[in-house]
Amino acid sequence: MEHLPAPVGTVLTTLGANLKTARLRRGLTVQELAEQVGVSRQLVAEAERGKPMTGVAVYAALLWALGLLDGLADVANPGKDKVGLAGALVQGRSRGRRADDS
Image 1: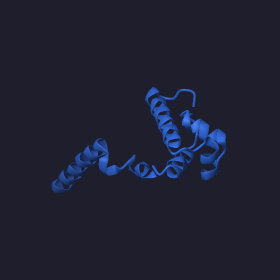
Image 2: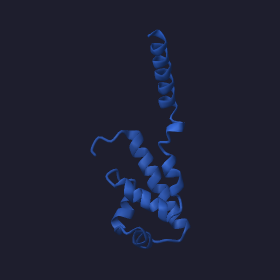
Image 3: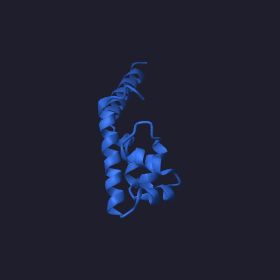
Image 4: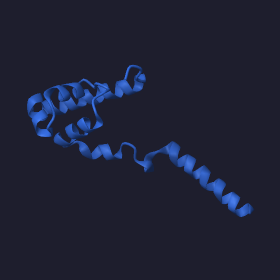
């Protein structure tokens, strides 16, 4: 992805650095972590650098291996989507008014 939005690149770089810190704190080598999740050392290293084309499954597997997967399912939680909830509320009111008008 050549033209990645800057905020996305920043988040991926931060995620990669966080994964590396978690690995090091657990005393794991790149090779050990790669074997645990069933990927190559190169993929682990790329994820730790925040490489954009690294698949989300690799990031998820690394989070799992490091005991940090729980937070991932909450990333796009509809209950915490302020913009989406506000839009749903407006749409709900609009539908309610239309139903009352008919």
